[in-house]
Image 1: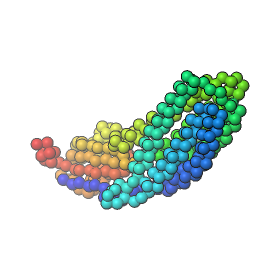
Image 2 (image 1 turned 45 degrees about the vertical axis):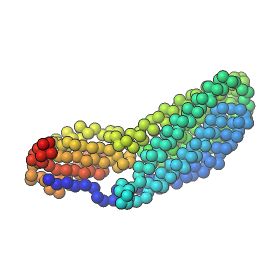
Image 3 (image 1 turned 30 degrees about the vertical axis):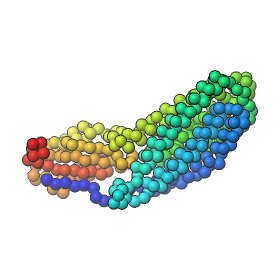
Image 4 (image 1 turned 60 degrees about the horizontal axis):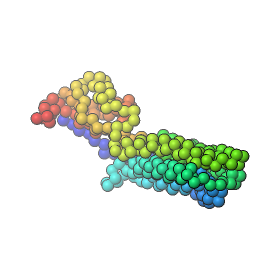
Length: 303
């Protein structure tokens, strides 16, 4: 019986994260510089949609700060207490961002319903001016974030926040135009509810995906049964592959443990190396702990 486990350095954060971190910091500064304008302006013109957009920007600034912290911490090297490093912090921040967005959506819905029940006068012209400036701000930030690595869940979470903000600004502008020319104020809470639905769908997906990683579920695109059958077909000396566990430390760091039954002639380091290389090249499994066993070992384990 032979066993091999990964003992080398488990921190694989590249230059992409450093670039993402810089983009997130710039976006956070821009956002923080304008969020109070929308909140105060929304209260002044009495627009719930504008206030909601401003509050969303406030939480975006916090979300970006959290995302920046996630990138920063994830670059710390592995140590004896954190043997895989801190890469999963990015997944945690993505989950927090997604969950926070869901809470925001709930608040917007409540405010919109209250406005339906108690309509109020809205200053359409002033609302339009503030919303246009907000749109330009959001487009700039969205462009900065979208130019980053969208395969990274933490970066995707930050970008999602500003996609919602950009759509929100467009909706507020449309609402301001309608209110200015028709004085039909119900459009304000209606647009707020539309924004809530759009943002909520993306937030739910982000929360679900990040939670799946945190719960160590099988990564998307991987099928345990397919991998086992492929190994048995590709290596004729493997007669059974079982006890497979597959999960991810981070989005690009997939882990696997498995047992494989073979004959005594293949209980060696060369067999271990061949199987590991194949799993990396064909299935993108980066870290493998593989136990080779013979019929005698299997019978002993089952007895």
